[in-house]
Amino acid sequence: MTSQDTPNWLPLTPYRSGDSVPVTYPEGSADDSAPFAGHASDLRKELATAKRIVVKFGSSSVTRPDTTVDSESINKFVDALQARMEISDIIVVSSGSVAAGTRPLGLKSRPRDLATKQAAATVGQVHLAAEWGSSFARYHRTIGQVLLTAGDAGQRDRARNAQRTLERLMQLRVIPIINENDTVATSEMRFGDNDRLAAIVAKLVGADALVLLSDVDGLYDRNPAEPDARFIPEVRTGHDLQGVVAGDGGPLGTGGMASKVSAARLAARAGVPVLLTSAENVGPALRDASVGTVFHTRPERRLTAWKFWALYAADAEGVLRLDAGAVKAVTSGGTSLLPVGITAIEGEFRRGDIVEILGPDGTVVGRGEVNYKSSVLATMIGKHTEELPKSQRRPVIHADYLSNFATRL
Image (cartoon, rainbow, N blue to C red):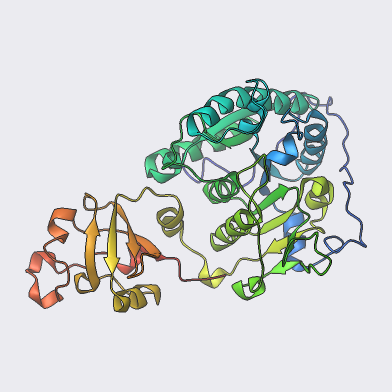
């Protein structure tokens, strides 16, 4: 599918002309007196008119405390999504499959071991998809369930196939409901949480905005239950996050505020602005983006599509360990990695594979496409270019194919 085949925005309309159901945005719990509401900015205006949006719902938003699927809440979410679809293309990322499968399996709490989680996911995915489907059917809309693993995004051909599938679904006026494929994902091949999955999907489909909805109204510098907690309406750079303490996920989910901030910064680095708020505020979030915390992009530091894929989605086939000087060189930007700065290699890889780059203390500093297979590179470690035969004087990783984590928002 070429860019000419796929328009940037495909408006979704009810299937039967003249038969659509009038909708309005649900108001939610937001009011202008709350610290997380009543905000306005140029970015919020852009979010309010974005043509393609990925909207992510957390487990606690779509399931009740007893782990049953919350039909009433899903109906409210769909009402808001339907209203926004008058101007925007919507892709939904929905957590909750493991939680939704807990009670039907007779389990008293969310499972912890991988096999039981996967078993619960197989049951919960059916329940969740049925609820989303029946709710959207009120507006004569069809959904399509899309289950992804990290491997789907990590292999370029599979990522392209996923992208084409999502584009075709939207051309057919089907709303994609995306979840991580917990039934087959291993602990080594997971996105980790659906916040990160949503950020990767947003980049994959060329979204104009990402909306992360959970049970928290936005970003605070500490637990919002604390009396002195300060609300943070805008995040422009990493400096806005100094001193922020973000917690882990609740009993029904795997993510938490730390996960959401990480995903928001990931999407922003890919050029996708983010709105972070609670699912209760879905109405104003999708209507005028006046609630929650927004994360700005920085065009001058935006990653190319390839570097984003290599850094955050690709499968790493090996590891290169660097000395301090090499780390400084490759993280400063525009510098290729040479053999002299490599202290050790791990794994078996081929030319063209993605490898992870670690500093002396084991910290991951970046990733890149390696120019030599591991057996050849092992003979080059620590050598200056002039010490190598002419056939080995190419950089180990060229600067154009090296992406690092040092660049901050």
